[in-house]
Image (cartoon, rainbow, N blue to C red; front, side, top):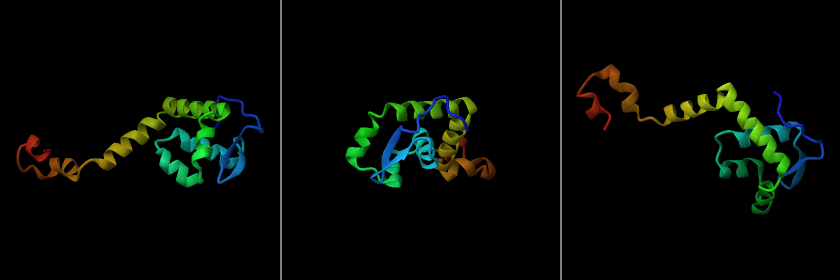
Length: 112
């Protein structure tokens, strides 16, 4: 998986209080997670990011460029759309997925 951004080994993020190179496996995983449909709170919890460190991430130009490149790659490949559709499908009420099989009542009534 290649990024469109040339990352410098000196480009780091602070995760769990430890500097992590964006070019490391953990740095690349963090970049990928940032580009996905993961909430800020989930990211902060998963990687142990303090409020202060979170604010510094917002100013980390190398990270922002890497996340943007990862996001663009996910959009071009269709991966982002597939994940979004999966999330929507998982949240759909069961009545919508069962309605064509049961056939009771009018379709609008079954989906209300």
